[in-house]
Length: 261
Image (cartoon, rainbow, N blue to C red):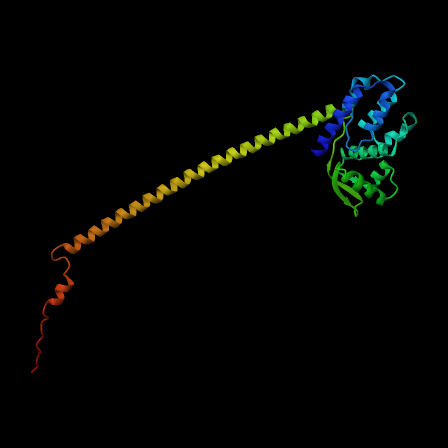
């Protein structure tokens, strides 16, 4: 977010400047733009009418340089160097940074040998120093150097200007992602609905079980009352059961001995 905010301010500044210049006067501005450490996007500057008017003129090379930095790589510059102006060190650094961002568009694991070839780096130490000091510290990429596997594992990479024809592909990719997200959302909503239904079923079952338990409790209580009343009637009937205390209070009969002759 910080990179994008800085870029927006820088782009606005250069768009205003480009709008006030014509022809060869745009040359120094193009060199400054393509050397700026915070600038990674150039399409808005290219779209300035004064810049587009360079097409087909003796100063069209400035427009080609801007397009190279907007969409190209260090390899593209080397293959077309004879028709382009010599790049100063800051421009070389910028174009190599942009080359890393282009590679990051299609791969999240960048092998060292590929990076060394694309950046014209002769050894691993130089490559790792470039990735750390000129890319990671600059905030344009985040990731991890895997010295064992000899690769760079990307976690984040800043974006570049879309190449001609790439916008349609990006729209299709976003459309596919939107369809997938919509289907996933529908699936989640269906599962939530099912979960709500099962919760209601569980509540009804719990309520039904509770009602049955209460009915059983009431039934047991009524039966216990009936049995208790029955015992009371038995013990309260005359002659039904002799009172134990009454039995104890009666004098016991003494038996006389029987003598045999």
